[in-house]
Length: 263
Image (cartoon, rainbow, N blue to C red; front, top):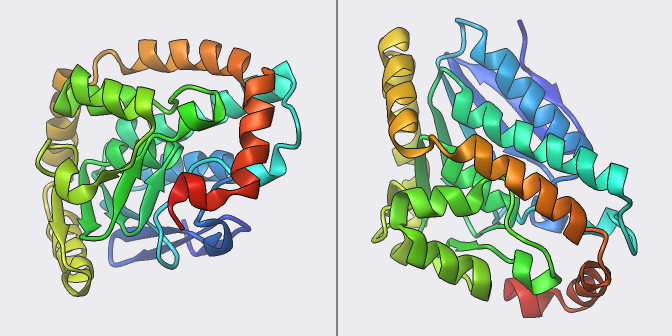
């Protein structure tokens, strides 16, 4: 199967057992729309079933990893069916990473915000450049964390930090995130790619079945509540996406992105 593909939201290229998936919406800081969520999930599930693929590297084009859902396409409001479809796609995308029998490595530069945090933390290994940060910005626009992000923060760093990130909506520099064991490592910009490539190459030549069973055991130990959390997020977020607070929050964010992302 060939994974060399280009879509409107990402590219996927298989090279020497490593599938490199790159989000390609740098003008929107790699925000992802509904079609991209569906495509990413499908691509990762297909790769997981292919013995030619031994590891996935997920990253973003340009200076940022992913700033979450592309709210510029949401309009003033979201009806219940659209909200539910979006949540189903988002949850399936994140679950495709967690459930993949092959390791996933996230290479993070710049902003990982919104569901971008979930993508980064769902990976088995998360390497970031020193200037990167995590931001659960949902509360700033009247909604709640989704993609299981809060559960992943709590699993790694505990409830207090998860509550602070989710309830206050402040950015967390990766230099602090690594101290809380949220990510694997932080490196100078010039060293990040070499670190990611070294890890990907080692995994690509490792014992696939042993890696699969090891990943499964680690996720069983740390992410057992994830399905229940995703279900609760889906129900709550569908309600919140239809509220006036969300419409007002999106309008304010699109008009003043600096206030949310610190651009």
